[in-house]
Image (tube, rainbow over all chains, first blue to last red):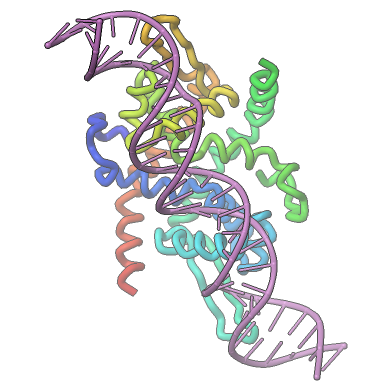
Length: 122
Length: 122
DNA sequence: TCATATGGTTACTTTTTGTAACTTACTCTT
DNA sequence: AAGAGTAAGTTACAAAAAGTAACCATATGA
């Protein structure tokens, strides 16, 4: 991220930004966290846990998360078809980092809410 | 985040999601990281470092980040006006967490790029 | 025969972002 | 004295992303 301080460099030279924008996307985070909690989840279950996500965005995110190597998709030729999503080893290493962040969030959430109130009053 | 596993609960009961969506937003992250690197930055400098951000989004983000308590804004009644942004103590505690995440990203960025290549070939 | 289930996709609408020009008020240049 | 420059934004308009809801194939159970 701070590898180059020369801000005139175009973002193409900072792939970290690109990688992060996928991995720390709001929905991606929730998907990865739930897959970390349950070892494997099917499409519709995942949709229920990641409350509020649409089919469209869920399938989009699953694709890019698979492409980036965080999750794996296994389809079983049954009827109706069964598809199972789970974290890869790489995904597991990421979810650990994410959990640290969410713990911080959970701890500091009340503080943020308080700040918002205070700010709103001014 | 996993305080309630009952996925039927509406997201209103999970303010962590709300707080995170502000704090882990793509642009917010970059703003906070740069303010962590330089103690204080003015609007236009910040804009140069956070490469690619627009005036509009920058000022939006600065407002919500201020409201949530991560940054503070000091305006000096000079001509032309001078405005300095910096992290609050709370913001500093957050940037530490963020740096852990970005270090992981930086380390694993090549792996993600490799995964993308592989995936593209199939 | 009609509804149900799965894992999506598609067309359409709404919301969010990005772009670029403009603002205010003072100072420096020509 | 006219015009340009500066700082920190704002605003109107265009483009991109996200949300909504209907639909698809296929088979099973009522």
